[in-house]
Length: 204
Image (cartoon, rainbow, N blue to C red; front, side, top):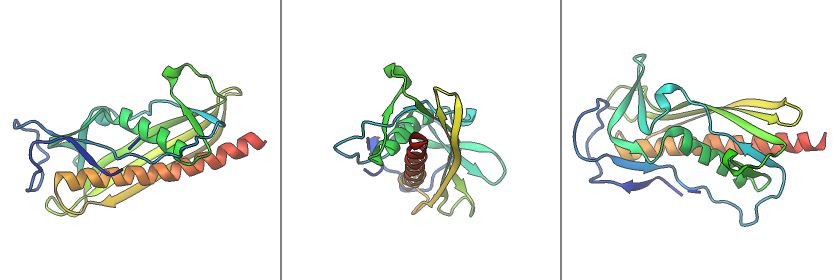
């Protein structure tokens, strides 16, 4: 459902380094994850139920999280995601499965009850200042996924996917783009893994 990082609503692209301390000011820049190109003919089977991923409490919002040293999580001033992290990552995970061309996907609200399901946990979805406050930070995304046979109530496979991407510079647009690229990298790896594991499960 998405190409490269897109600014939905922005006043002025910030030319200076970001501040992680919330403060009053103009309306924030709003970013969304880029679209994934999907095949024109989607697979009919196997069908996977993709649930809303679990996330730590600090990520259950639409703010861009920042890690500095060992001080915990802060948030960028002047920037937001277009929707809460669990929602945008549920869409990315579903599209990552569809993009393999080997899986189809449904959401819980569609009322379909397929044999297979995927449960995911977003462990990291943040910027990491690993080289000091002024240097370009890392975008870090970690997804822990489980594939479930919903009929036999058994675990098919589980795996953790990690991706980091260095921002081109210490500015909001570059920082959002780094998280976007990391999310897509982890999603692609997860999608191919899921397709391989479910192909094996269907053949057993």
